[in-house]
Image 1 (cartoon, rainbow, N blue to C red):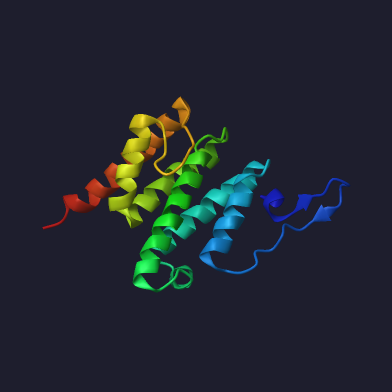
Image 2: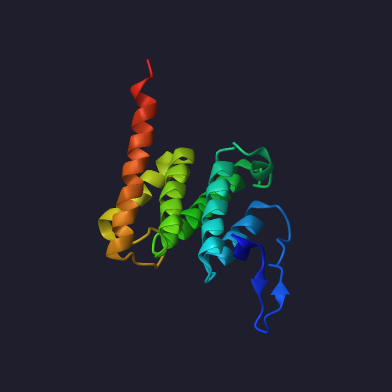
Length: 168
């Protein structure tokens, strides 16, 4: 975790990670993407956790994040779909990580995204498991990613079944 706070430059000097330019959804998404591309596993894990927090913001559970998403209804829906697609693609890409705490966090992040937007996420995840490709992306999934995504789908189904089991 110390590596997630500081990085070493090529000369061996301590260097602070670049600060996010703001607290908007897009800035946090870009920071998460930078973290996911890091060679350090704790930074990659931090990136996945940031994605999960952003996913919670799509549902309006974190007011400060939700407020940073455009409020015009037509634009907000289009932007939300694009942001949701970015969250899903980054989370699925994190499934390829060799560190278990990174890819298991990605499995849970995909489940959280599905909790927030099930009608958009479930068909996308099911198609990705079945076909090995992500809708709207040129990326192809490895067999390992498909298996991990299937694990995420099982988690989504269990979470949704638990909610509907106790409804009157």
